[in-house]
Length: 317
Image (cartoon, rainbow, N blue to C red):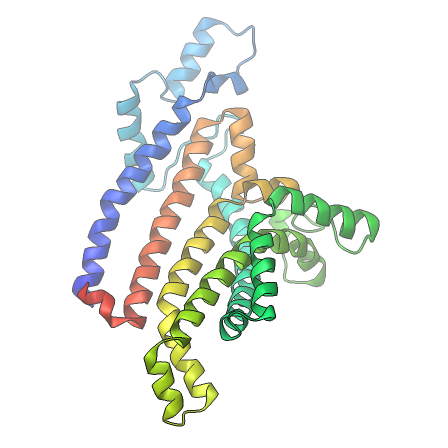
């Protein structure tokens, strides 16, 4: 187990470096000058050169990358061009909100997906299976932003039972675990959980149906095991694959929530990315993408370790 863990950690190092290189280089492919967000149109050449030197944009791109990685290793992601505040603090404020949203969306998606998938797998081929599969396909097919706008119109405008935007009545900096703040969380969490629910439902349904058709399940039933005991064997065999899918979906919830957070004005990393893109704030854009990408790499590493604990055969692969 320890050797396998060390191998996975070693494999993660070049992946993290490659991710950092891609994050750094992608933002330079977009047209426009990053200083245009803070420099007026009639600024002098001396002022532009001074700001370019201050932000390190006067150096060659490879040199900028080496300096950026060196600072990132000690937690310095630079300074936001638009606000002048440290990028690390900007991301720290936003990522906590995104984490809250992603965790609640994950709970909804994972619980509903496992329940629906298990029911459809047990009743494989029946009308229940067809109804659940249709719901899962619909969930995967519905666009996030469209569903979010529909929910806002229904629950915030027509029925006026839930707030339409924001992370709470006092703003994102005053989050509290009370009813008023939880109301602001309901609509974005439900919207963000629809696609993972559909994906996990289809995955668990296929796993359960396949495992129930195995010979060892027939043997367990023939030996007189109860349905609960057989179900535990099914769960044990389906868990590694289901866990891998859930880990990937959690990563997508953290990094792919830009549209949902924009629709609901949720002050998370997705909303921060949207702002950085429109303002051409390269340090903020690079830092946010890097943090989300490294979190995704770390999450995959954690899933690999948990899979090994659930299925010892993976260690021998």
